Length: 159
Image (cartoon, rainbow, N blue to C red; front, side):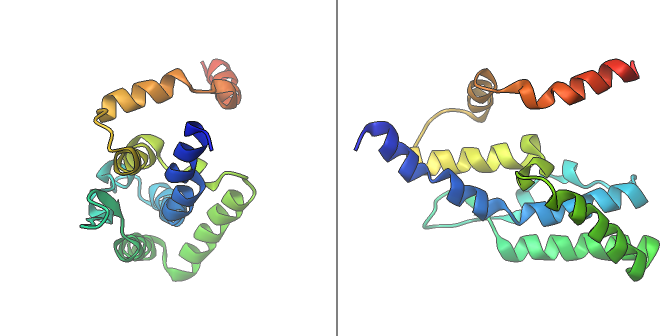
């Protein structure tokens, strides 16, 4: 087995994506809360309150219990503003739009959530000494920006 194959197996990117997939539910609620009460901070709060420093893992990892509590807190804020029935409708609408997309993690903030969590995963697997800033830079170099073409056109039209 070549070094690249061993590294890919150890990194287990697909497994990591599954481990953070619960964030999609949180971000669907963030979208609704931002729609009904944009003054409340959501994404900018970051992920620190959603992780636990696992002694076996040695680095922060997403905690399902904390994630569920945060989802419940956001849902409660939504219900407080628009009521339970409308809240359920709004969440269902957002989740319906998300379900039509192949990569659900596209709805999660890469900068504030996915990149830092991926960085911690990399540091655990590779015992890497790369800084988060260097990690972001190296990923940016490899970025395939073709998925942003529609955004680029929309910005030009809006300008």
